[in-house]
Length: 156
Image 1: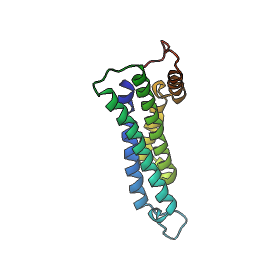
Image 2: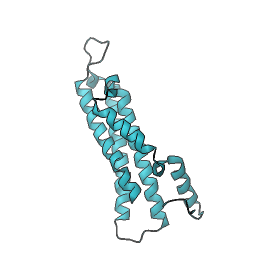
Image 3: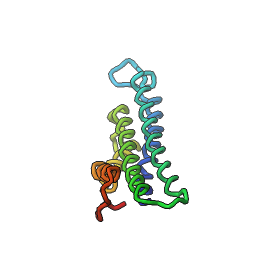
């Protein structure tokens, strides 16, 4: 459960980044144009849909794992492994959502005064925690799905 609680800021960050990116598109006038607005660009509209989809995907995976753990059923190794994978997946997907938003929002979103850079920085820091290390977590899940015993250091 701790991994899922720790992943909550990533999910919220991705949802917030989608809203910030939507607002940014509505306000942004593209540089080196004669007043073209970002909101009118098909590529920006596509990117917004991708950011929103990634944020929803991260949230859905995260919420599903929480519901499983809070269902009142006995929690076995399979549920513990899945909750760890869900937490890492939520952070990984949320990070992709924020990165995608930042890539399309223009350089000024990297100023310290812009909230989108704060979300990105927070997610970059969060994903560095060992509990969200994708390779280690995916290896753990893969080993479990193949019938290997959990090791004492697997932290599930």
